[in-house]
Amino acid sequence: MCTHTRLVVVLLLSATLYSGGCSSAFQREWKSSAATVAPEGQRDDHLTGRWKGSWKSDKSGHSGGLRCVATQIGDDTYRCRFDATYALLLRFGYTMGMTADVRDDVTYVAGEQDLGKSYGGVY
Image (tube, rainbow, N blue to C red):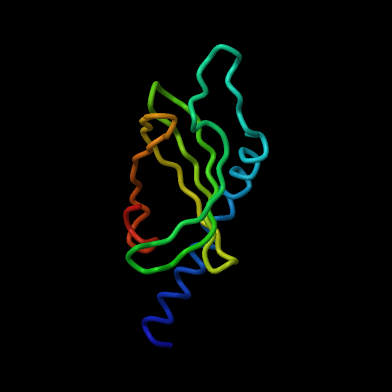
């Protein structure tokens, strides 16, 4: 088996094992976090709740589905829990802090997380 094939096998096994525990916890949080509506008279924070989209690596071109549950933890800070898919069958998840800046009803978010070299580095 060549080195590249071994690396792919190790990554696939790691991703499969890594995703098992966090996937069920994420799924519970995803189901319990329906769209949040701010109480009457309070401004909606634009970000809290669940989101669905996709991701694409500029470096490798890899892509997949992406879900996020965002929870406000400060005036402009959030805990964002992500569940991502890759190659249709593989799942991986991570949690990171993000900041949000709302201008003209548009929310700009920023943050980064180092997933480690074997998972693509910094996102």
